[in-house]
Length: 549
Figure 1: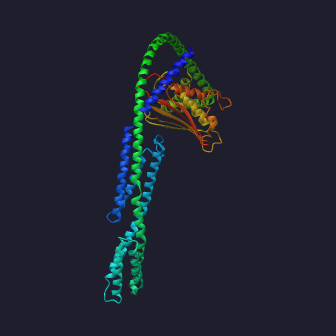
Figure 2 (figure 1 turned 30 degrees about the vertical axis):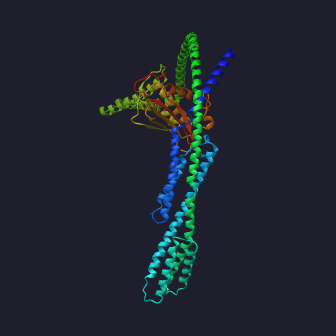
Figure 3 (figure 1 turned 90 degrees about the horizontal axis):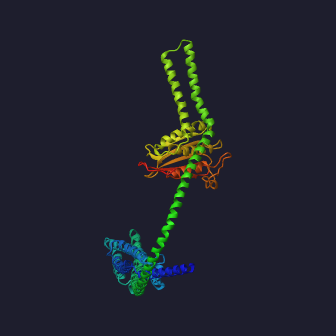
């Protein structure tokens, strides 16, 4: 039977793999990508032609600035990035190597055009400025006062040079260049007045600069116009269309095979349907056994929750035992004050010196101290009592304040300042007050014990509350002790793991269980040398939904 199951599994796996392969091959074409690729290559041809036209306009002075050239080059690069053939494109590996090589040739041609455009812009700008200066200064020198000595000779030389330089625009090499050089040499031999020497030298310098720049600029222009970006793009398009036609034929063949295999798969699925019906009847008996097992598991979970409640109560009693000295000291203060006030009243009454208003003030103080002692006893009794968890909408800030009051004496004895930074207002949470206080108390005591006399800053324990998003509140307990080593931080929530000599290693695991039972999360972070931060969240639940604790 096992062999038959393996054969059926192998058959099904092979059939599904074949169907999947045929389906992928028959739908390998992406019409949107195909259309986009063709449009991109057409755009490349159009932009290349537009770039050549703008270069010619710029050379003839019909373009006011070079922005159209810059935009055309940027558009070429942008269109290249849209093609799926490049080495960096995610789809490039699906195309033949020949298409990749042709694409790289197009990209190299575009890069060469970019380089030539930059060279053309700099050369054309310099040539244009030189022509402007040469024309302006030549015209100014030609119109000098004819009565001045040498003016006729200068005007004639300037006129001949200007005529020769104008022919440079049509033919920057050959005889026109030689003629212009001859006229520049003659102008250098003219005896000019001292006030014209500087201007003549500037005209000659710019004239020679024009003669040097014009041939290079024309060569750059010819190379720019003949760089074969357009033909390379056409070659790339033809190779891509041929590849696409092959894919279409291949996809059509795979679709025919897929239709035939789908019929076979449908027949096999009908066979499996009847087999599954028989198996379903057999499973119905198994489900009854599973239902019994689930009931037994729920019963075990209920017993585990009861044991967890007992353990939490024992831990609270242990904590109160550890805090007994501080609580006794805190109770001793109001009791001592009551004794002192009462003895004072007795002495005044015996001496018959008591005034009613003074006695009333003293009695108010005795009542206040008695109320203070009663509050301490009430908080201790409430914290230590053994009750089943009771869920209610509670004010987390009020619970934290009571816990801080309970720890006030111990913190004062150890020289630790407790700072409360509680958000107001803070949403109500559905929780058990005693268990929330037990969590906060354990985290606060750990923080107080983590700070000793070697702490560089004054020991301070900070408790903060705030909203954590829209569905929870966040409680933070932060000390400025020495922190917890990273290797220890990983295990602090493990049961029976402790760093204290007399600890049991159950406090933090119980706290995490309480928080997680309320639907929250407890974690710790530590910055070496700057203390430890414990944080836990409690979900906001104003509708009073049940929490499994």
